[in-house]
Image 1 (cartoon, rainbow, N blue to C red):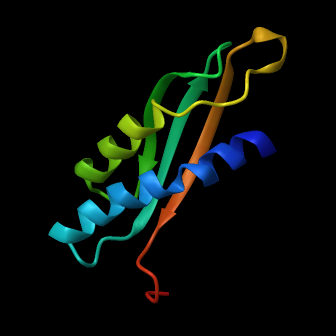
Image 2 (image 1 turned 60 degrees about the horizontal axis):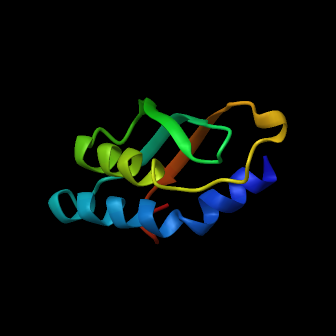
Length: 96
């Protein structure tokens, strides 16, 4: 779990890039985007899907999923697929 969080943290700039794109069309955009993804035996993301979102921005949500699919995670122990659910809280700095 810690290694997954470390990879997410390392790639958080990509998520924020997606969010910044959404802010350009809606400056008040904020919310939680929960994604489900599967890390395969190679450490690559096999599938990534939107679990739920209070952001209501297909642009940002699809951008996050697209980026997430390019991330490389540590190889899972035993060569098994690992299912992960991860929430991203997106809000502008200084807004709560």
